[in-house]
Image 1 (cartoon, each protein chain N blue to C red):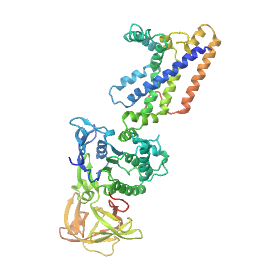
Image 2 (cartoon, rainbow over the protein chains, first blue to last red):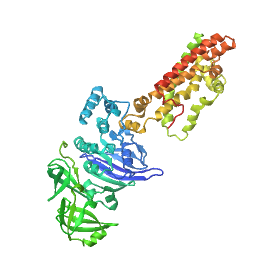
Image 3 (cartoon, one colour):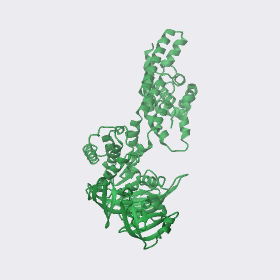
Image 4 (cartoon, rainbow over the protein chains, first blue to last red):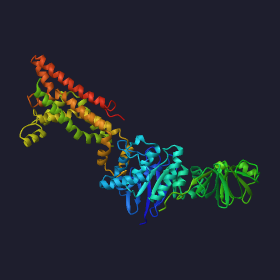
Length: 370
Length: 224
């Protein structure tokens, strides 16, 4: 049997939506699957089914050759026997235990020396030195998140399940820890399922991505595929970003960076140091189209290209442009008429530096790839 | 002061409290976490001693353990003497009579433990039993102590049930409250006053301890 986690379940709630999901996660090489969708889309329910905290009415979940739940035969493997690392959204740290006590909590069956060794390892891995004796209430949000991760990792889980791992944090801490989590997941090489509704997290953490809405899987693919080629308007609306391209930072000065995308250079705000690999993300609504370059606009980026496709989407029209790399713009119907936009027409796409979002790419600086 | 009665009372209260911790903890766990639809039937039975007159409870216990019931006959065959009017019989009655005073604070404290913490414990590999001892009980210490102390204090002051089931046997089943009653019947007010004061002081001290330890958890009814 192929070494993979296979999920094919139906879980119904009285008076609420029915969650129906089917997807696979290869165990070799270990990869990170992101369950992405708005709140109420059923992603947490799927994660809880994987953890053994909810039971689907129909279908099965298998981990390699092991069956975790099979509704047809009524077989249920309890969470205790799955050897998983599960982290809930609010971290669920035990208030009656210290940081070290929380990390050691699930290591009961091990000999004392091994237990202490594992705690030291986890403390070192998540840089919690000095906090071992503190209670969870004495920690900052970021530290609590790291303790919860350390506790989940100390048992050396076969599968890591993270429910909105960063959502309980304030925004600056979140983007810092997102980077740390990315390199940690790469370094540990544990198959992982991460639930998030944040597109930056999905892009930064995921190797694969499953987009959910109202309990249904809308699309599955690599994050770049999903963001660039949403299967339909629903997915496009949920993921929000129509252009996601890999790039590399080549210049940085005064808070602005220059990113090389394909043969083009784009100016963006912020970003990491020179040489770092990033995803360049541009919302279709943030792109202005003009018939020719005016030369005197405030937009830092002006990209000449040709129209490849014009796709009506309700009140708006999506215009696919080739400007050295594929770019999606969203404009009104009247703009399409005034600019005579159709296949092959030359246009200039203007994008403000602030509308070019940079997301650090998987496996970049700092991580020791397995 | 009748020191023999005081000794019997303290022994009875201590053993009652101890037994109630042993059987009350699993019962409270079940009451707090069972999803059984008809759970309220058992909840009501546990709470009955709160509202029944002690004489009614005592009467039924007496009948149930007496020589005419199968249970009473079984016990008499096993031990060689019937259960009523012995210390063991009195202990059984005390345990039933004080059951809600132990179980309800336990169950209230258990129900207040966040479900998400319990689930986290399961995913960390701990069985339900392991989770109970390693997480739920440590998080409910105030409730467990409250239940144990309340059942102790409640047993100190028993009268009706003791009279019905225990009778009034010096050194065996004559407790402090019965002794006070006897003294008053014999018009020995001075003796009664001393023993009564002793009981008042002990009960007050015990309750002071509970209230001081935790003013919030002391609740007779589980509240969500």
